[in-house]
Image 1 (cartoon, rainbow, N blue to C red):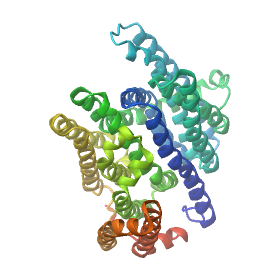
Image 2: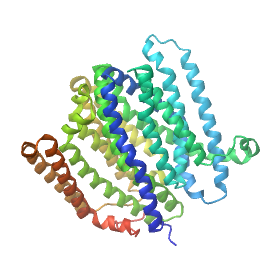
Image 3: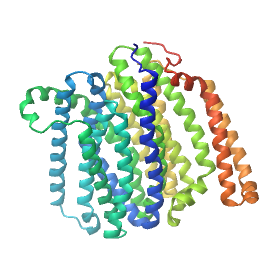
Image 4: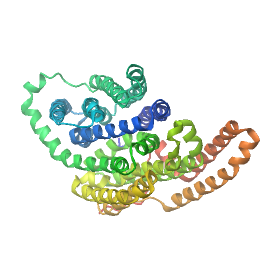
Length: 498
C-alpha cells in the first residue's frame, strides 16, 4: 500500500476536520455579531488588545512545542516511541505553565498607573496559560489524526467561547474582563477534554522515565525554539497594527477594526482549516520517507485549490460586504465594512502561503523563514506607521493584504529552490476571470433584485444564485484536482526534483 492514505480514510479525516471548522465558522461571526452589540467600541478595543497580549505570551511559551509535535509525532505515531513522546510533551506543558505563572507574578509587582489595564493583567495571564496548554494538546490530536476528537474539541471551544463570556457579561456587565474570563473558561474546559483524549500519562511517569524523556525534550527544543521566533514574528504581523492604531487614532478605531478583523480573518482561517490539518501530517511523513515528488504534488495541488477558492470567496465577500456588516456588526462597528473583503482576502492568502514555505520546514531551515518573515514584518510596521496616522484602520487592512502577498511571493521564490513544485496557470487565470465577471454581474443585479423582491428576499435570491454560479465555476476550473483528490490519486503538477 502506498503512503497516501486510502480513499475511505482520507475522506473520513477530511470531513471530520471539516466538521471541526463548520461550527467555529458559524460561531465566530455569531460571537462578533453578539458582542459588538453588547459592548461598546472602547471596551471591545480593550479586549482586543488584551487578547493580543495573551496570544503573544502563549506563542512565546508554547509554539516551540507545537511545531516540534507537528514535525516529529506523525512519523512515530504508530510506534512504541509515542509513549515517551507523550511524556516529554507532558513535561514541557508543566514547564510552560510554571514559566507563564512566574512571569505573571513578576508583572504584578510592577507599578501600573492605568487601573483598567492593571485589572486586565490576571485574565490576560490566565488566557496565556490556558492557550499554552490547549494548543499543544490539540496539535497532538491532529498529528495522531484523531480527527473526530479534534472536531468535538473545536466545537466545544467555539460554543463555550460564546456561552461563557455571556455568563460573565450577566455577572460583571459590559466590561472587557467579562470577555477575557469567559474565553479563559472556554479554553480551560477544552483543555481538560483534550488532555484525556490525547492519552497524556500521569505525572509520576516523569520520574521513572526522565532519562528517556530528556533527549526528546532536547530534540523538540532544538527544532521548535527557532520556530517560536517565526510565530512570534507572525503574531507581530497580525497584531502590531492594533497597537499603532491605538497610539495614533485611539481605542474606538481599534474596536471597529478589530471586529472586522476577527470576523473576516477568523472565517478565512477556519475555511482553510480542514485541508491544512489533513495534509500537513501527510506532507511531513512523505518527506521523512524520502518521497520528494509526492510531497511536491501535495504542495502544488493544495496551493492551487486554495488560491482559486480564495478568489471566488473574495468575490462573494465583496458582493455582500454591506449586508455582512449590517448583519454581523453592531451599529457603532459598521464603519469597518470597507475593510472586510480586504481583510478576508489577506487572511486567505496567508493560509495559502503556509504551503509555499513547507520546503523550509522539510529541511528545518528556520533561519530562512525568519529572514523572509522578518522582512515582511518590517515592511508592515513601517507602512502602518506611515499610513495609519493619515488614513486610519483602512490603511492597516491594505497593509495586511500587501504583507500576506509579499510573504507568499518570497516563500514561493526561495522555496522552489528546494522543492520545484508548481501550479497550472490556466485554472488560476480562469478563476480570476470568472470571479471578476461574477462581481460585475451580481453588483448590477443587486439593486434591481432588491427593488423587485424586496431587500431581504432579493439578497437571499441573489446569494443563492451567486453561490450556485461560484460553486459550479470552481468545480469547472478545478474539477481535475477535485476528482483526483476524491479518488485519492496522485495529483498532477509539474515536479522537478533538485
